Amino acid sequence: MEIEQLKQYPPLDVEPTIVTSTGLHLYQIELTHNRCNVGSLRKKGRPLMFRSLDGASQTLRTLGFTRAWLTEQNEDRVRDTATSLLL
Image 1: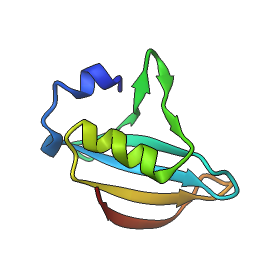
Image 2 (image 1 turned 60 degrees about the vertical axis):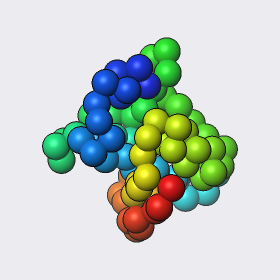
Image 3 (image 1 turned 135 degrees about the vertical axis):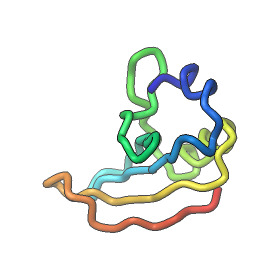
């Protein structure tokens, strides 16, 4: 979902998840609307990737979010852990 599209939804309707991969120090934001995954947060058609958790959190705060899930994926793309994160 593009950032501009996301601005049309109230933050309560969309649930963000910050995903990190084991071994990589990159963070990506995935979005869920009504319990359906709508994809990664994008800008100009490209998924946004962050080098720090703080960068991903700051972007979500700027968009009006106050809470997100933080998950870690292993190489097999299986989510290992999920933690609620206050922004």
